[in-house]
Length: 335
Image 1 (cartoon, rainbow, N blue to C red):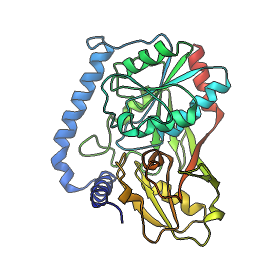
Image 2: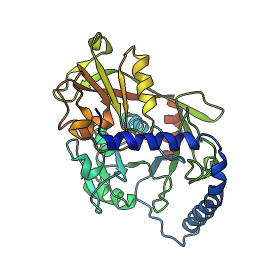
Image 3: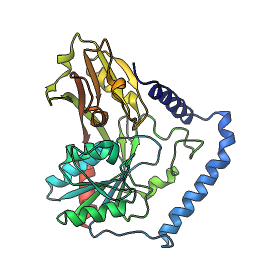
Image 4: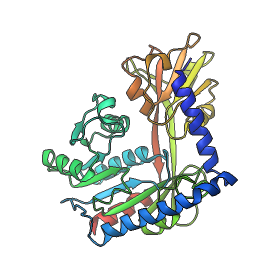
């Protein structure tokens, strides 16, 4: 069975996300703190805007892909889509990231076989899938400088997350929204899930909705995938290959239910094992006595590959978007 720490953590995470989806009386106690959070974040952004706090301009344009809510929304698949789109139009993108959980303060290059405990799980996935140079640092401007120093041919930087990292100037801002959760109760932290108020969306260049329906001015994104890659030998399988087998599925991402729903849409029946986002998996978490097959996300596979059982498979997912977003990015870069 999954490690007890993971189970208890996801229960609290689920509870908290559930509370943030509605307004309950106890949140009245948190409204003053949410108000203080709003004041502090507004002042901070203003100080960057007027130049009191320094902001770095890199020699190439920066496209930030971020969000205004806590939790995963689908930023990494969008960054991969942008990297492929720009490459197909003659650009040579590089990718920077904070590297959630990274143990190195200094900028560091990320390779396809880098240790995710040192550089973060999402950067390793980006390095494996994008074919672009990837660098991480808590200071994204330093990550960008280090990347360009080693890869001067790069002519655009994609920042995976970093919307609130105002120490780095950007040519374009793209916000990704979870179409199912949207903005929850629409309150700022800690009373709700918002890192910044919804008014921030009027200042960005594009709003991308991951799943569900869109409204005027928004771009639709859908995550598609019906192939599985074996963690041990890179074999490829389809859902049909798992027919009649006992399946366990695990997900340590911002919204595990989205992954499980995707598997059900593929016709699979399985036992669900949700974990918190960026969870540090152990061998115990992925081994089940009655399992014929263990399925997981690509991001989780990065952390489990070293100790996963032989029949462990990662769902290969690609973002599908209207090229209208790509055209908007190209127009912004050409300016």
